[in-house]
Image (tube, rainbow, N blue to C red; front, side, top):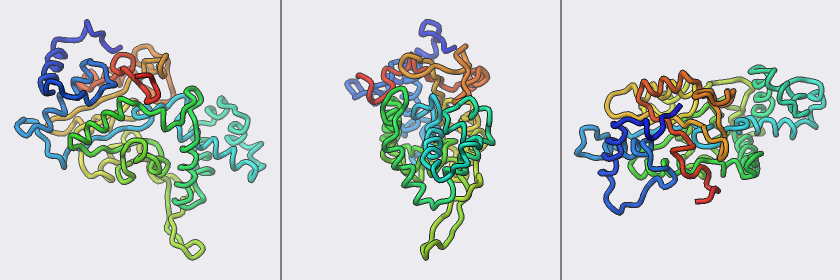
Length: 340
């Protein structure tokens, strides 16, 4: 579990004081939705030292790279990944063209809203869903379909657009980092072409700064026009050990800050904090069932197959000096639609 304020060591107090000293009196708080806890102060202190030219930890702007996971780190990932919700919706939209799906798994499970059967079909079933709903069209066509869906789809619990179920503290952090000379990237297990149509509008992160999983695309001349066709074959999975590889291929620089929320982000944080100089690794810990969700199983919270945060990750965070950001204590406000 995350230590209580009374249990936090003297070192945390020193970090707080150092960060406060870096902020001029009367300065506007760049992270107003963050509670005044050691997690916030670690961020402020880190940014202060890497942007201060007189500091031994100064990092030039061109090397200030910050990477963020998306699902569970920048927006809500429960009760299912948003891209999975998109795939399920696409199956229902396409079902009239495929009467055989009524008696074929995993499509039958989707059409009957049988999530137990869908989960039982495992990764094979998910691959079939992705192939049927994400391929067989051009990249432009897919971008339009995904963009139209995300513009109207709502979260089943919060009754808000999925793009409103983003974390207000993280929006502030992204703005703060960019104002401090950082370049911010998404490094997600989600589909790169699923995210790119809306990340600029929602996060201020341009399409070239989005790294994600992908399927095979092929250049073709279709109806006399040059296009990229999406084929039903996986190209790259940007998760776990794939994340540092994706960073190397797409960004070409080791980040100095990485923010994740699950076991799928372990290698990204290891890669980021394993470099020389000042480094910062952070993890969102979902421990607020009232305002969002509580899941782990770290700290005795319910186990989750989505965004799993095992106790081994919590232990690794403590060992490595990574910041575990507990929603319940560290965030005063979670969503933009929450009362201020």
